[in-house]
Length: 416
Image 1 (tube, rainbow, N blue to C red):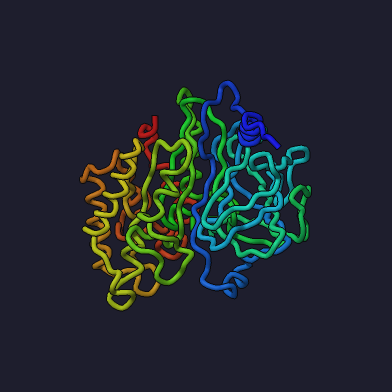
Image 2 (cartoon, rainbow, N blue to C red; image 1 turned 30 degrees about the vertical axis):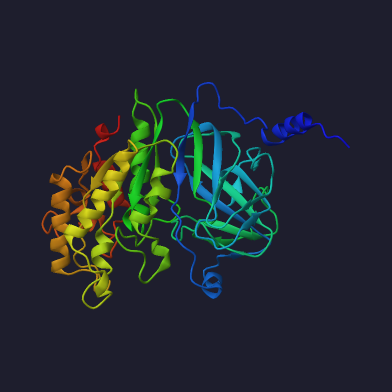
């Protein structure tokens, strides 16, 4: 039988070139409006089970708080650090009403290349097809992911400061999940993008637990990047800037986690995935280094003890890599930590190193500007400590008022 090769070639083109959904006329590109940095999986299945991060015939409904809005969105599902492919049976996106409930009429099924189900290879991510959905600035979205077979969670952001929900079966389109279990991690979900006007861009807040909002009020979105996002959007006559929080509690610049895998790989290792690979990035604020000092010492991982010079070298690397991509990067000074009760975390010698790093951030000219968080939260009578009005109680992490003071201290003229 003679085969018409031209016909087969044409057929193959049809099969692989399904038309992509075009952006609206006044939208030219994608920007990230929400994100979360993933950390590696816990070391064994028993630990994952205790953390409620194993799923089998279950729906995970995850709540995210966007910065800028749009009428078209897409979702980033992640199998980051996963060791095997993960099957997603179906996923939905909707506007969140309250708790696990969604706003009637807002639910949309997500597709991936026109198909409802998707398999995410190990350590990979997938982008959903665009969805037409009117999302207002600072809206809450409910993204529901059905995992039909047994899988360990991946793409995990362990400390979300946000209540998420896990229910049996495929309930991705359910109006509410009244019997769902609660989970305060984001899983298989690392980003939401919006179709944006030509001059719109993304600002990445890159850091550790202080950027991640540790000890802020659960479900309140009172991290300093949230307060900054509100101030940026309140401006008039300037293009919109989305703020994406890529902080990880316990993260360090120079070392991977030594005691808790949830602390994430080093900032140098994750910078490409969490910053350079994000859509629409124009600005980065870096607040890293306090854990490089606190997590090691003479009696605790002495081989990982670092000094100001080494921290500065790491920060210089981040600045150079951002500039290579045409991204403006701002250095944030390290906040005080005298009195913190974590064993071995603080010492006068470590505080001297912190001050040396801050002096370099202010005067070293490696960054495009300086954001002085130390000045924003320090106790004026005792500048080595966080002011009581801003202290969460552990003398390291701010409380809501402290995070507000940090967000309010940033000079918006840096972002034009």
